[in-house]
Structure formats: structure tokens, C-alpha cells
Length: 237
Image (cartoon, rainbow, N blue to C red; front, side, top):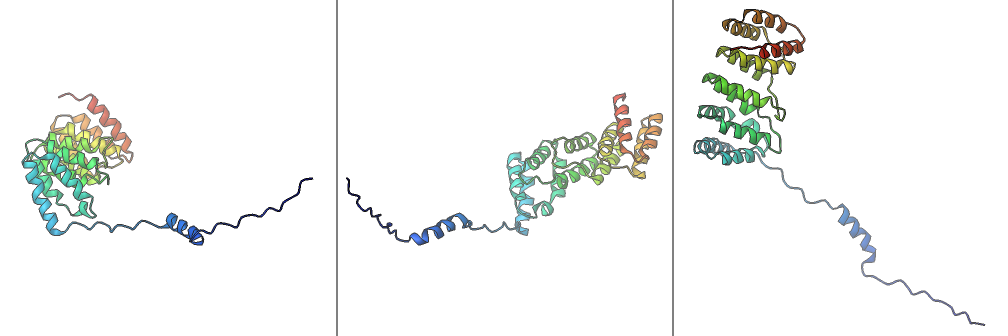
């Protein structure tokens, strides 16, 4: 018969700091990374420097650099409200082509913060209309109404575009702007209705002017969209 020998279990190994190990692991799992201080807004002197540099870059045909500068500035808090967009828009409107303007608008469209382009586009539209550049103003409005636009025009921008194009005797472009305005559910004011009517009458489109004025009074802006689509499809120079 085999003799049963007693089995002794070895004592647990003593590990230095074993009691502290769970606490250390918990600390590794829960310790948060040190938070970074939020970026500070641009100082007045920095705003002045950017305001002076952007037009110089554009005039020297350094359009990509101006786009990068504008994009970097917009990463800082409060820049969209504080940057001098009206003066920048006036400078862009004074250039012979809209290529620099669209380059900056495109930089805004691809910006990670997705800022609204209206602070730049709205005064640009006004400046172009003041310079009687109706075709270019209509191009800016079409850009704002693109499917990938970060922000469509607001009621004020629409009204300025429609009224300005009527004033410049471009009723077809005014109707296109009115169509986008109605598609967004924005109703035309009485003053704007009269401006559209007068532009149509001046273009000897008497029946169309009467029908459009009556339709613009309706609360359903979809009726305006339907009629304008019909008028534009049948438009003859």
C-alpha cells in the first residue's frame, strides 16, 4: 500500500507593493490627461495686422496664403464676429475677377468649424451690386445656394439681392434669386414685390408681372416657386 504523504502548499509569493498595485491600476485607468487652456481671442493689434495683410496677399495674387490665414484666424474664438469682413468684401469686389473671392468662400466651406459664409458673402454681394456687377452678384448668390453651402442666404441677403438685381435691370437674375428665396419659405415684402413688378414691366413682360405680383401676395411660397420656374423656362431674351 502506498503511503500518503502530506502535501504542503507553498506560501504566496511576497511581491513588494502588491497591495498598492490595484490602486495604481485604477489610477492609470482614471487619471485624466491635463487639460489644455482654451485659445485666446485675437488681440486688437493682431486683428489690425490680419486686416492689413489679407488685401495685400490678395493683390499680390497669393490667394492660397490668404485663404490659409483666414482659416487659421477663424480657429480662434470670436474671430467670425470681429474680423473686418465688410472691408475685405469691398476689396474683393474691386478686383477684376471673382476668383479670389470664391477661393476665400471655399476656404470657409471646408473649414473644420463650418463658419457661416454670410459675414463675407453678404457685404460682397452688396459691393458688387453697388459697382453694377449684376452677373457677378448673381454668381455669389448661386454659390450660397449650392447644395454643399454651409449656410444659405438669410432674408436680408435675399432681399438685397432681388432688389439690387431689379435696380440693375436684370429681371431674369432677380427672378432666380426670388425663386431661391421662396424655396426657403421667405416671403417678399410689399416693397420687394413692387421692385420685381416694376423690373418685369420695364422689360415689357406685362402679363408675367401681373401674375407674379398676385402670386407673391399668397402665403404659400411654393406657388411662387412654381410660377418662377415656369417663367424662367419660357424666358426669351
